[in-house]
Image (cartoon, one colour):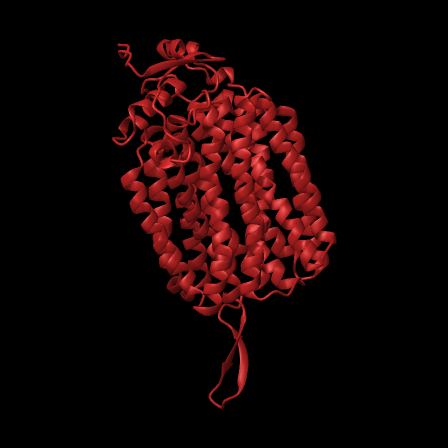
Length: 491
C-alpha cells in the first residue's frame, strides 16, 4: 500500500523519473544523524582494525629477527637473534596469513548474502583480534605454530571485504556508493598509516609482544560497538529517520526480501567481472609488496632504524587515505552532474592510477636516494586511492545483489599477491642489495600496467543483463528509479 503523503513531503525529478522523499533538512556535516554514514564510519574503523591486525607482524618481524646485544656469565657481550629466520623463512611467515585469507573470500560473500554482512564482518575481525592477543607466547614455542596461527587469522579476516558489499547493497543509494564504500575502505589504509609508526615505536621501546597485545585488545573494543550499533538493513535500525529510510529504500527500488540465486555461469564468463578481478589483482600486488616488505626494504637499502622505518613506511598510506576519500567524492560528483558516465569514471580513475603507479613504482628501483625513494613510493601507493573508486566499487554497478559474491571471487584471486609477492621477494632479495630490490619494483610496475590494459578494454559501469531482477514487483519499482540515486546531502 502506498504511504500517505505527508505535509512536508516533496518530489524531485531525476534522470530516472520522479523520486519521492521527505523534505527533512539535515546539514551535510552532521553525518552522525545519517545512519548510512554511521555505518560507513564504523565500517571504516572495522577495516582500520583488520589492517592493524595484519600489518603488525610486518613491523614486529624486524624486531623479532634483529640482533640483540646480550651479556654472558663472564660479562662478555655477544649478539643473538630471538628468532633466527633467514629471508625465505621470513617470507613464509609474512605470507602465511594469506593462505588462510584466500580460502574464505567466496564463502564470506556467499554467507553474508544470506545471513547479513554485519555478523560475518564483526565476528571475523573479533576472532582475529583474539588470536592476535595470544600470538607472542605461541610464536616463542615454534615458528610453525606461528605460521598456523597466522593462517587461521587469515581465514577469519578473509570474509571482511566480500561481506561489506552485502551491507552496501542494503544501505548505499547508488550515487553514494563511491563515497560510502571508499570511506569504509580507507580504514584499511589509515590502519596501515597508524600501525606502521606505532608498531615500530612499541617494538622499539616496549618490546615486540606489546604490538600484538594492544592491537588485539583494540579489535575487541571495536567489535563491541559494531555489534550494538550496526544493523544489516536500514529498516531494522530503530534510530534511522523516516526520511532517510524512505530515501534509501526508494533509491534501491524497495526490493522485497527473497532468496538470492546467483547466475554462476554468467558471472564467471562476464568480461566486466574479470576486468575487475584483473584490476584488483594488480592493485593488490603493489599494495601487498609494499605492505609486507617496505619496512625491510628501508632497513636493508636505506639503513633506517626501526622507529624511523615505521614513520616513513606509513607515508604512502597517509597519501592513499587522503586520496581515496577525495576520489570517492569526486567520482560521485562527476556521475551526479552527468559530466562523465559511470563507465567513464571507473575506467578513468582506475587506468589513470595504474599508469602513474607503473611509472613511479619503476622509478623507485632506479633512484635509490632516501628522499627520492620515499617520494616515489608515496606517490605510487597513494595513487591507488583513485583505483579503489574504479574497481573497488564496480561490483555494485554491474550487479548490486551479487556484489558480495563478486567481491569474494575477485578478492580470492587478488589475495594471491599476498602469498606470492613476499615469497618471490624473499627469494630475489638474498643479499639485501639495491639491485635485487630493483627487480622487485620493476615486477610490481609491470603488473600495474597489465591491469590497466585489461581494465581499460573490458570494464563497464552498467548493470549487466544477467544481474537484472526477475521479480516483477522489483522490476516495476526499478522502472521509476532505475538509474543511480540522486545525490542527496540533505537527507
